[in-house]
Amino acid sequence: MLDWAWIVDHLDDLAARTIQHLALAAIAVGVGFLISFAMALWAVRRRSVYVPISAIAGILYTVPSLALFAALVPITGLSILTAEVPLVLYTLLIFIRNIVAGFDAIPADVLESADGMGYGRDRRLWQVELPLAVPLVVAGIRLASVSTIGLVTISGIIGDRFGGLGFFIFEGYRHSFPTEIFAGALPTILLAVAVDVSLVAVQDRLTPWAQPVTAAGRVRPA
Amino acid sequence: MPTQPTRAATVEFRHVTKRYDPRATDTPGAVNDLSLAVPAGKICVLVGPSGCGKTTSLKMVNRLIEPTSGQILVDGVDIATREPTALRREIGYVIQQVGLFPHQTIGQNVATVPRLLGWPKSRLRERADELLALVGLDPAAYRDRYPSQLSGGERQRVGVARALAADPPIMLMDEPFGAVDPIVRERLQNEFLRLQEELAKTILFVTHDIDEAIKMGDLVAVMQVGGHLAQFGPPAEILASPASEFVARFVGADRGLKRLSLSRVGELQLQPAVMASVGDDSAEARKRALADPFPFLLLVDAERRPIGWFHQDSIPSNGKLEVSMAIPMSPLLNRRTTLKDALSLLLDADVQAGIVVDRRGAVLGLLTVDMIAERMRTTAGDGRFAPALEAAGESAPASPA
Image (tube, rainbow over all chains, first blue to last red; front, side):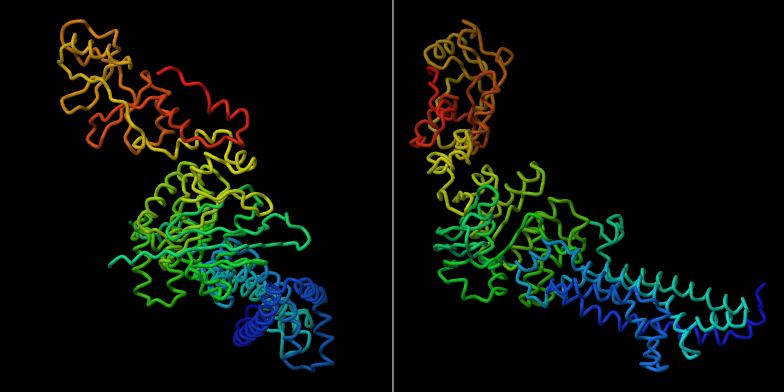
């Protein structure tokens, strides 16, 4: 079925495309997170802006990705912006909703006692609220990463220079060559799974307190 | 390390009003022209039904809520002139849900205010350990745990330790023992009262439970919906002479019984007991017992420690008194026993006289139900607001002594 010789011949290409795939996804997730974080903080402090912000992010999320990549070509040409702008836009809804939910999940009594003990506003944000929002924020990063890794393949529509592993999918499709489609699709899936699993590990490191109480090993014996 | 000098401050409310709705004065949590002064080192309990403004009043002291009008003075200084975060770091704050930081260890939680105040790191850890020990938690076992690994009662103790960390002169406690079961609550209350004997902080304490208010308060402020102060005074005064129908109803129809919990056996003049020792001559003992209006003779050992009772009619007319002839003992009381506990024990006993003993167990005298009733009558208030049911309970004719 599979043309193993082709795969062996193209290992270098596969490696380069995998790296490009990760880079495109990482830029999108990073930039998307920064924009969303600012938006979410604004929404947390001024509740009235949350509805319009999440509505706009929601509308952007519904635009078909294929169409969005194609529509940007006349505006941004074949630059990296054409690939990244849609990828970033698709992360916004996921991030904003998760970050706001992360802040909303902080128990009111914790905030009240923080205020009562004399935390200032900024100190409370960085030392109390943010650490406690971490579980849902990381959940957002996981969702956004997996979805972006999938979407990066579609950016191949704007040309050979983009698409990461999606390049092979488009090429394979054009040449009716299943091996090449497979060589693009399977590593994409593996990449998404690997990133997700590593983020779970990161979350566990960041939130030792949120682990099950049964983690008795962390309690120093009396 | 030497214990820090205890400090306390006075807290005074001057015509403090808080309105949430400018048109209505009775919105829940509103406070209306509240004036009261808490002396340094005393526990003042704010008690009342929900919506009476007690929590609002408390939160105005650390400026979590700003009054609409009026002033709150701490040691004579208007707190409105203070920077809120600096003010709060000088006021301990304990709330019902405790509000420990889930992402910090117990040690870090306790050291919160000292950390905000910028104490050096080594001192933070030391201080956290001191406070954990103070509230009865072994620092080595607890300091590195997270709040989710503690029981409700343990979390409450940590909450108190955290509030005390920077040795604040004032503590605000909002239903601090409200979320734990009654047995744990009672223990925490007792421990806290013992702690307060040493610390002598000025404490404002909010509860909706009148029994807790009576138990914890040096002073009790009864509040009613609309944020009106219905009565302010020592618990005994509020129980003995409620200032209004509302206060009488709020403290309950059993306020006579509640007053019993404020008096202790040591405050009463005890009745001397007719006593005899094991091996004494029966005839002589019988003669003495019959001469006394109280129909029982108390058998004691050589150290005057009680063994049991003889009814005056069943003392043998000759021979020696023996342990086996005595009927079982009635409850042993000491001077610290509350009259409420004493009464409860007496009602259950075969011989309705409590034997009051000293620290070594030797008999001091007897306490009877009639003596308790007499005590209540002489300290009763004017009974202006005593509903019929209550009046019946309080003025019930005493059975002849």
